[in-house]
Length: 106
Image (cartoon, rainbow, N blue to C red; front, side):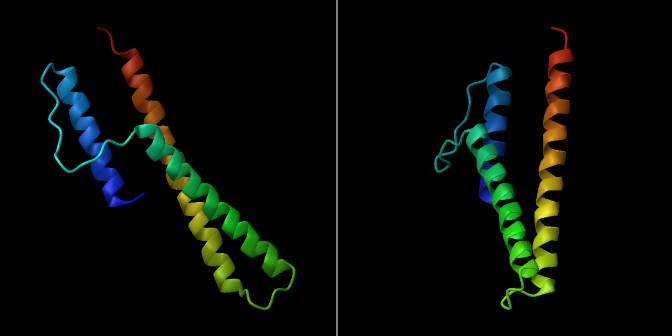
């Protein structure tokens, strides 16, 4: 996820917070509107692409492709694993936040 995407997500959260507090939402002039679902889908697609690329590289190494070395395969596998673990942790935080909101009594 890029820094720009994070900044846009923070801007949306601040606007939602202001709206929930009954204040008019302040929009920054240059920031385009980005949907949370779109950012989440793009991130999931990136994780999926990293996993697919590492599996392809692994398969090519196993089949004896001379253009692929073990170091590249291992680095690719670790990148895919790390991106997947990061997404799992983000999902866990989102589920935890959702449960906390659902348990809030009004």
